[in-house]
Image (tube, one colour):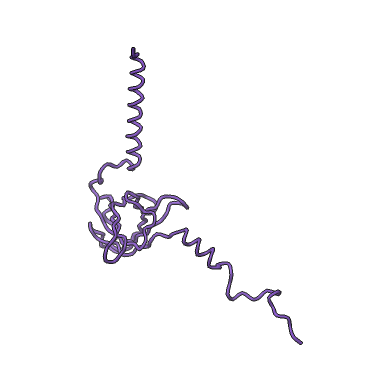
Amino acid sequence: MRSPRIEFAVGTFLLLALATLLALAVASTNGRWGTGGDGYVVKARFSNVGALRPNSPVRIGGVTIGRVAEIQLDPTKLDAVVSLAIEGKYDALPSDTAAGIFTAGLLGESYVGLTPGGDPEPLKPGDEIYLTQPSVDLLQLVGKYMFSGAGESKDAPASEGDAAAPTE
C-alpha cells in the first residue's frame, strides 16, 4: 500500500522542481516577457560583433536603457546589422549618437555602449547609428603582441656584445 505522506512528499518535490525551472527561465530572460512594448528600435552596423548576443544590454554611462533585439548579416555589405530596442523614456537620444561594443570586465558579457552626441535632432524609430566601433578581439590582440616582437625596438642601439671588434 502507498502511504499518503509519500505521495504528498513526491508531489511537493515535483512542484518545487517546476517552480525552480520557472525561476531559471525567468532569470535567463532577464525577467522580460515579450518585447517590452513602449520602446523604439534603431539599427547600427558593425564589422565585428564579437560575443554580442540578442538580449544583451544597451547602456549609456553604465545604465541599461535597452536591449539588443536582433543581429543579422547584411548580404551585400557583409556587415553585422544590430537592432537596438531602446526604452521609450529615452526618446531624446541625439541623431549623432555613437555606438560601440564593449565587454564588462575581462571575461564578462558583451554590451552595446552608446555615447550621445550634441545634435538637437533626436533619433527616430528605424534610424541607423552611423558612428560605430566594432568589438575588440582580446585573443587576437594578445597574439599580435606576443608574436610580433612588440618588446623589441628597431631603433634601439646595438648592445656591447653585438658590436664588431675594431680592426687595426
